Amino acid sequence: MDPVIATFVILGLAVIAFVSGKIPMAVVAVAVPLGLWATAILTLPEAFSGFGDPTVLFIASLFIVSEGLDATGVTAWVGQQVITRGGAGKRRLLVIVGAMSAILTGFISINGAVAALLPVVVVVAVRAGIVPSKMLIPLAFTASAGSLLTLTGTPVNPVVSQLAVSAGGRAFGFFEFALAGVPLVALTIAVVAVLGPRLLPERSPDHFDAAADPSAAAQGWRETYDVDLSTKTLFNPTDGVVEVLVAPRSSLIGRRVWPGMTTRDDNLVILAARRGAAEPPHVSRAGTAGELTLQAGDAVLVQGTWAELERYIRSPDIIAVTSPQALRRTVPLGRGARRALVILALMVVLLATGAVPPAVAGLLAAGAMIVTRVMSMPQAYRAISWTTVILIAGMVPLSSAFVSTGAADVVAEVVLGITGSAAPHLALLVLCVVTVVLGQFISNVATVLIVAPIAVSIAGTLGLSVQPFMMALTVAGAASFLTPIATPVNVMVMQPGGYRFGDYWRLGVPLTVVFLAVAVLYVPLIWPF
Image 1: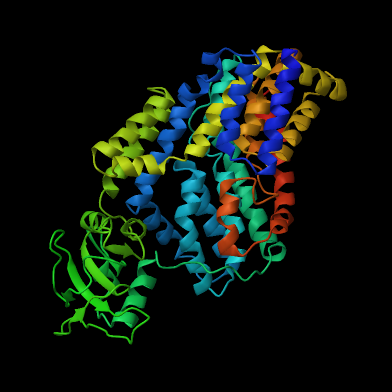
Image 2 (image 1 turned 135 degrees about the vertical axis):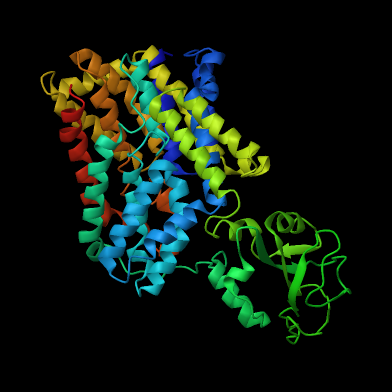
């Protein structure tokens, strides 16, 4: 089979598989380089070169850094400080939520920022008498705009920076994205604040588990166990409380417990215990001599250091109602927060100054998070979104194949045949529209990797700089507003907001128009053709 045709066939099959959702994205991403090797388009080392690409390593390290900030309560503290000052005004809250989401995304990651702010925004909305569905899509959309503030905002940014270098251009600076990102964040917040209350639906959300909110958890325990302790007493940067259930066939069955008793191995303090729901309630009150002989399903409150609680819940004898890790990350500025902030600051300095390559800066920061015990090695492994990493690593060779086989030139000739060689803005518009459309159904990283070689070919044919094309694709790739599957953060807010598939496009259409206008009209003014 002709290499060009084979490349298009592999691309088409990959897009169909992505859109169908029947095959996991990671499987599709691995199948792409296998297909390129099987059709002799690339050699085996070339087909799997993406798994050793510095950009892929850099992106993986960002997940670890983001987890370190989230696990130590840095994001919780920042979110609470800003959002709780928003009052009860709907538009004012939307502006504050949007600004907070965008800023956090710029320095952490889009997924990490939304995950950290999601429970806080729901609590704030409920307290202000606003249904969460009026707040959560704006949270996701402004995070997408904030991803254009820095090099680390989204995996697309380092990818296009590297592609620009490969095409004979230069790498984008750490804050250079902000030249397009700041106007986009301002415009996105304005559109969300003005049109959001009108275009967003009022939905009854599915049940949103608030147990990971320390205040809500403490209030529930005070009512259920009659424990007369403040939230600050139950949760602080060094110590916490976790509720556990006695597992079936547990070795603890038949043992007597009482308030003030300590566990044998972990030196945890038992605050209270109660009989399971199947039996008449028996509450053991802190400060009394009440005892309870444990049965399967009984609940116990235990207090200790966060590390001891983490070890305790691994026992097969008990089942944690909420993991200590989930509760710990909601305690503002917990243990290790200062170290995490210092590491983040040093990484930003290295990236901003260009003292070392981005992959080196990211790996140094990720390693420092582990060495300084901000997080454990297993926690670091869990923090990495392996689907994202494999997706990027698998699609990088396809982008290379588009160039080496001449497939990009074929598409570029078709685009130029439609737009003409004297209309670079029109060619840019066509590329951006293709990027936006594809980006609503498959990963924006995969979309940019597919379209970028075509943009490079068009720029070379017209004798233009590749920089405006790469930045415009970055902007268009961030316009993931029309479907819930366009980006992970859109999916993250869907259930707590009670959204339906068709709820996104109403606010998404005007925002998409704004992003296309910025990509086609504004970007070439800053990065001339």
